[in-house]
Length: 330
Image (cartoon, rainbow, N blue to C red; front, side, top):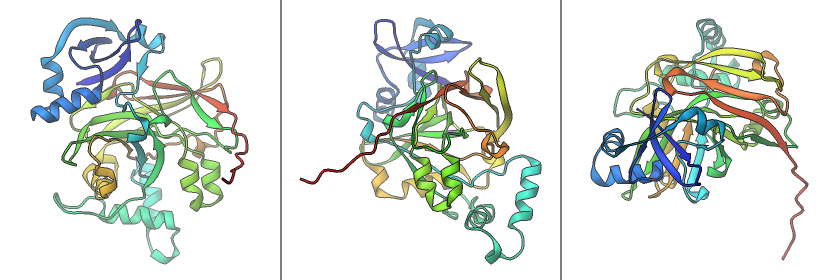
């Protein structure tokens, strides 16, 4: 099941089931968060509750998207109660990439860079037996819910950025129950978006490079993530023509960590189990246009698409002013 959030022409929020380009409205719930909270309270599944409340009211997805009324598949009315986080060095990539990576991480551990050491740790211990903890992955913070952009919205990068590059990824979407229990609603495609030039200067700048917008959606895939996810990432120039395109893969078949292990090492912190909060957690990628020496320019568009997740995610790159902020003493 695919769920989408959108706004009607009369500016009312709706959630609906997306099938064959038609959105069927779910009655009684204005948001994914409302639906999730009701499912938790009733002890039922999200898909089951959505199906039982589905109405005959329908909208054409393309019409809603053309009017820029698609919303991210999960949000919170108070953006400060939505954590946007992620993890990297989790994907094995294509067969050629895997072979190259295994050659890089072979041999003497002390001779490896910190990144390669962490990647090797994941390969060796990222898929533990069920119910046990594996090696912890890299982890980073991207911001709160105010950083999330729906399909059709601009990804805004501050003018001090040295680069703005896509990262086509799968994100897990979560709600924390009243008892502090994390509940996974499902998954969405995303563009995690980072400043790779800043990161390349020094890996300790990774934290800075991740404090950027991200694209998410448009649809929430309810249920388990397929073991193999295939998609395509594209850069479209200002005229809408493809100037870079590459396939990407995800899912546990293509990862050095299980989803469960990545989730454990996020939610093991009590800070992230606050009742009522929403979490969007990116799972990493092995495909970047930056790796092919592509520099994306303002006005160009990122497109991330995977058939399992419905319509493509499209976001134009924009730059916003970021004047020097002088702190005042009181």
